[in-house]
Amino acid sequence: MTGGSALAGKISRPAKPRKSRIDKPRAGGYAFLIMDLDLGPGARVLVDSSALVYLVEGVPRRGPAVSAFLDRVRSGGGRPFASVLAMTELLERPLSRGDRDLAARYRRFLADSSLLVLVPVDAEVAETAARILGEGTFDPRSRRLPGLRPGDPGSSRFGVSFADAVHLATARVHGAEAILTNDEAWRDVPEAPPVYLVDEVAAELEWS
Image (cartoon, rainbow, N blue to C red):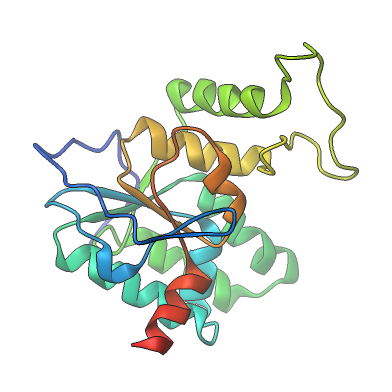
């Protein structure tokens, strides 16, 4: 474990990061395979809260997939990072249920900057998140806001929520070369980097 908090400012940019390669087209987008993950030293990879849940809680199949993906990132000199919003999302359930052990596991993981760096939600991230939500809800053809799905305030026609927009904005502002999540809707957001899905990584590991 490293000492202190893993919270950091904006991550410094590597000199010339290499982008991952698209493997093959698939329904609704592209499949990105872990074997094609080709990142230069210092390249940044954003990890969504859902992937961290699978990893820390040891969810069968998905947990090992996240672990293998992050091992591949680190072995190439990449730097996994997440929005500090992930701390709120991860701690909400164990704290509401009084599960002190799980809450402590999440705190220990998030405090270790050798595993994951947390970055703050600053003004640039906040405005970028607002733009992502605005791009997804405003229809330039009709110049009207379409109705949102019941019970899903702040969601956009891209299918991303307020929290999703913050994570995607964090990836955009900090120059992420890839994202690990299990939400396919993130692939529909303009300017998003290559989105790797945990279930696809798990399937790939089973094939290999």
